[in-house]
Length: 109
Image (tube, rainbow, N blue to C red; front, side, top):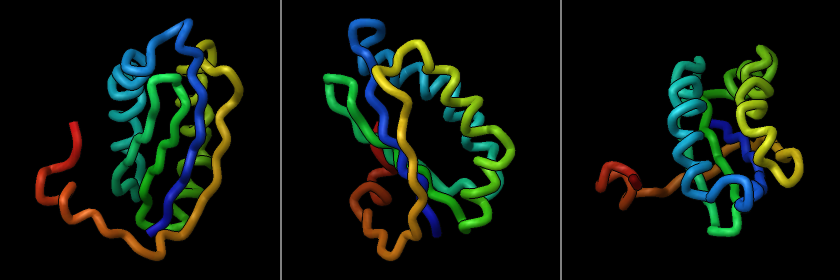
């Protein structure tokens, strides 16, 4: 399994952190779920608009494929007017994953 980590900094004067998350869930998440090899997502965010998205992918090829098609850039453009600075991203191999409580509870709302 592979993960893409995207760091973001939303301008909360333009849009609240919760509204930005709602927009992400409405506009980006459905498209993300259609990507071949997509396996899940973790969003970490604070009220000041800084956060991290960790998307999980079945393979390195699936993670790279979502970037090669232009999909990633298309999704970033949906928030371009709300960023304090362009998001950063990096890919990693998942060497350990342990989330039994989230799995048992069906995830976090």
